[in-house]
Image (cartoon, rainbow, N blue to C red; front, side, top):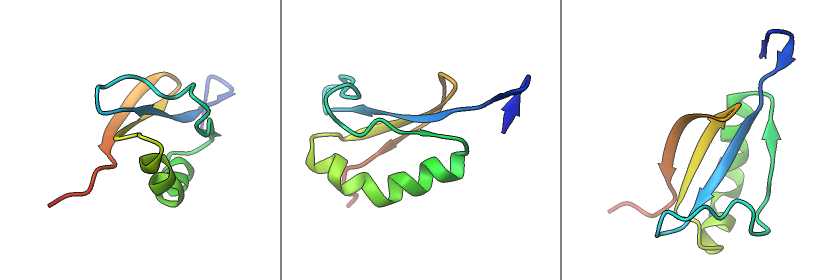
Length: 75
């Protein structure tokens, strides 16, 4: 998707149990051109992130938060 002639970027931020941002701590930093691509990537990589101490992720589009999702098991 483009806005004003530029491509929109979808990115993930990674949060630990205390809510601290872990994005810059050697975890994968990917940028996606569509929400679907970003969500597919997360579906393939969430377990590795959870094993690295990430408990929540935040999907953003050009810096604006789309939603937050838990990586913790339910039940």
